[in-house]
Length: 142
Image 1: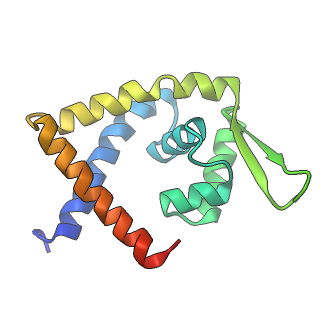
Image 2 (image 1 turned 90 degrees about the vertical axis):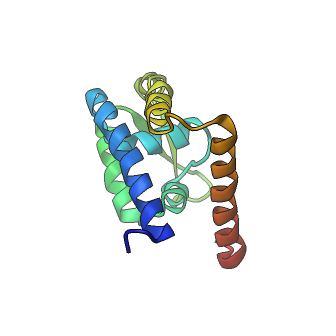
Image 3 (image 1 turned 135 degrees about the vertical axis):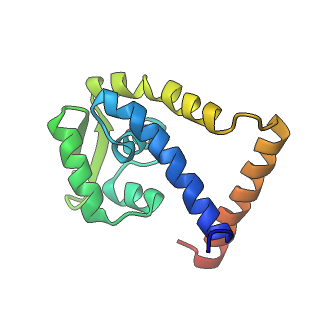
């Protein structure tokens, strides 16, 4: 098991997440919360369903995570007038201020974990991983 590609990918993801977790905890958020805030800031997600799909997490877990962010004043939830079942998510001023600190953290963690890699190696890895993602999307049409 220790040499399988799935195991190695999972370990690498875990190590990167742990590195981020150590830094964002100083800001009072978890890695998962920071990821949600970044996705909202970048426009990659607008609803709980969007976040769940992007993070591969169930809606219930995302809802609990968002409740904690809302209590901290980092996000706001707004029901749509045209469909009351849909709740749009947005960053508050406080959320935007916190998000402004996250890119430096992510870059620092990546820089440390990719120490010794050439730019070409990083681009090759990015391309290969994107193909894995694309193959999933082509196969499952999510």
